[in-house]
Amino acid sequence: MDTPTLAERDQQLKSEQGVSEISPMRLRMEKFAKEQQRAIVRALEEVDGTKFRVDEWQRKEGGGGITCVLQDGKAFEKAGVGVSVVYGTLPKPAILKMRANHKNIADESNIPDSLEFFAAGISLIVHPKNPMAPTVHLNYRYFETANPDGSPGAWWFGGGCDLTPCYLFDEDAIQFHKSLKEVCDKHDKDYYPRFKKWCDQYFYNKHRGESRGIGGIFFDDLDESVSDRENLFAFVQDALKSFVPTYVSILNKRKDMPFTEQEKEWQQIRRGKYVEFNLVHDRGTAFGLNTPGARVESILMSLPLTASWRYMHEPEPKSREARLVEVLQTPKEWV
Image (cartoon, rainbow, N blue to C red):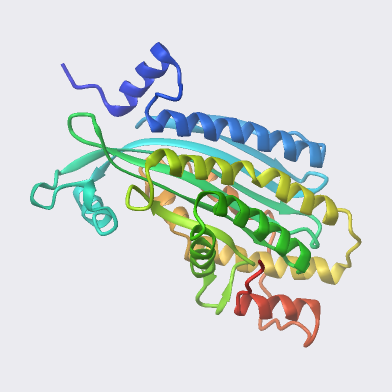
């Protein structure tokens, strides 16, 4: 008889025992991501007055997800909140590559031909209609490998949240960063400076010489070398829960402000730069598109409905547009 896969074992565990504080972290992270997805969707529907389209999907390799998208709303040109749960198998080349950051994924003298893995995460993108309202992105995820005997192998958390305005309001940048710093400081005073710098370096359009937005926090590969699993899960939970109150209050200040046709055109140009980062540099997009059984529509949910590329476009000197570019070229300390 075939040994049950990790996906089959987890399915059995859920149906027999449900998910509680003593369940494997895989099931707890999946449950938390889905609860937060529902809470965020409710909050954004309240702002926009339009319902999200909800698509549930399954992967034949194990797992599946829920993709919620709102298009052409009153406040949002496009908003997407996705949860994905992926069970799969890492081939030997992938294991060797991951050993660079995670020595405990496999013993150097005994690297298996393949390892089962689990990944679950929530990702979100909001592209508002009004150019005065900033785009926001977040992603929080958990990754675990399973040893051949079914016991957990290596594990880590990753994620972050970042803001991309087309028009810079310093008070919004300060509010956004202050909220993230408070969450970080509650867990470890080193987190905010470290993850803020990581965010500035990661969301950088190298070919343009500027950041994608005004940053936030970004982290990856947080494992037992940083803290224990329970503490890192608590940090990820607090970070995700802080999103709605912070972003919705910024959004409510900006979504009904007057704007001109030229300001709308500038938003389209900035959106073009956003697309460039996501398709050229983003590791998550590349990983998603290269995963067997990938759901392309969910992976590309982050792209705006519209964007433009104008040849040799330069903002007017000393304009608000020029100030934004200046800040993107030299990231600021906001708090």
